[in-house]
Length: 267
Ligand code: HH2
Image (cartoon, rainbow, N blue to C red; front, top):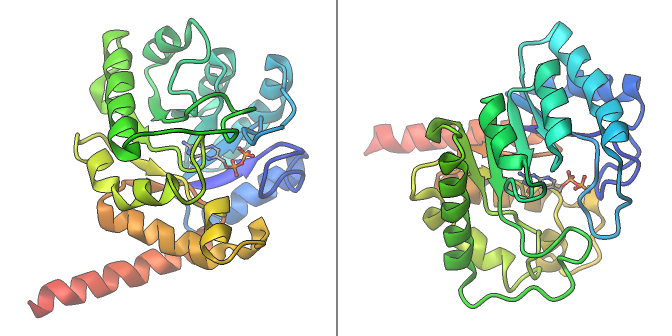
């Protein structure tokens, strides 16, 4: 899944694809690079990001989704917590609603997901985007994230979302201490995968990579760590990777799979 943020302030690519021609050019590049899905977002979730109105968010994502749909069959996801934005995105051709609040943001989130009938990504986050990194606390981070996701999947199904539409995401970097929480969660991904829902993993360019690498690495200098963490996710059984650097990740996956195949024919 390739990321396109049509925002002025996203943490890793903010402002680069904020105008429509630049965003469409980036979509074409990600498709040519091998993305199976594109995740289009019109509001940054990073702490301190400016709030965006429903109308503004729709105006950012819908023309791009329409333009991609007009020329490509690639699967399109919309990264939003607002039901009205998800509704407009699905009408424009999106097939997946990626919600970092796991359908908790609005009173009608669950019912809207059921009505739209699209795939939904339920992501774990402790707290709210603005303050989530202030003081995240867990006893057993893997158990707590797994329990939260199981409860949100139950809530979605109770509201009428079909089981086969549900994806889970541990929400790396969302209300998690850089090393104390993100690393155990990545080390325990098998427990997030175990219930059998497809799992989406977003590690691309995130801050914990810089922390592991000694600190001070800006977002555009985290490619090696992004790929290492992505492959750790693949080894644990995740179904999709949300990434900014599609070409490099596809190459890593091809080599990973080729070696895995060689290993199984050798044994
Ligand atoms: N991470 C980001 C945004 N949306 N959605 C899911 N399901 N999983 C993630 O890990 C995830 C996500 C943050 O990355 P980015 O989109 O690059 O930044 P921003 O939120 O600042 O737009």
